[in-house]
Length: 331
Image 1 (cartoon, helix red, strand yellow):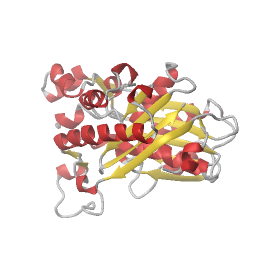
Image 2 (cartoon, one colour):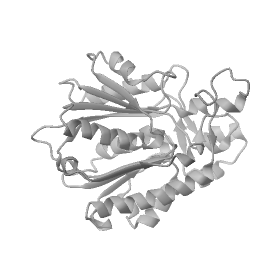
Image 3 (cartoon, one colour):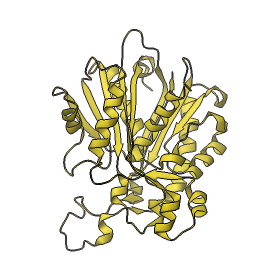
Image 4 (tube, rainbow, N blue to C red):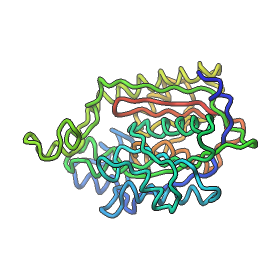
């Protein structure tokens, strides 16, 4: 582990969130799918999720969240904008430059990170590396996804889980900053590339190919394999982060993991040995928002005043690709 990274000091200078205007409740969804509300809660622990309309897009939600994050301290302007998303505004075109344009920023560096549900953690570590090396002094990290636009309307297994949303953070460094990374990790396993994906639209099955069908343009998910991966890799990663930081389970004050499924979170609580009162979770009210899930939960913790100087906060993402990434930071 790089000492330069773990010794580097930074702060979160602002945090903002954005959700679509319509919440899709279990009552409504159960009626649409012809299932019981209790079945939904038992499967994923989600009470409602937000579904964007045609005017609400990955870009519009990202811009709204960014404006709210920048409002905490609007100057100086960020010199780098990172957008973590796997549902970009347009195919073959990054969304980050469009966000910068909508925010009336100068022509700063701006690019997308596609790491699916690990996007926030990988985006955070990428931002910290840019700050630590001196390439940037202030980074706007935006995590925005609209997965409900890619769901088959009759697929109960994906529709009960997924929700749209965005969250943004301003990360900066100065002599007064106190936060720092205690340990970090990331990894991937391409053998699981088809556990969660849209078959059509990419180079493997471009638009107009003769094999295409209705199912090629909506999400295909292997839920059981993803569940097993998340629990096994997630519990292993939590233990590794604590060990690398030379800490014990009792030294961790707060845990924020990707909000994939409440059953996954519960399994990680049981396997990690970290008490449930130290986990910040908002999946019940917003669903699985992919890259946005971790910063949405982080923003909730900040708004509720959970984090105090010296707190040790463990953050972990895992998801499609397969990818995983996490860090343990001291607030």
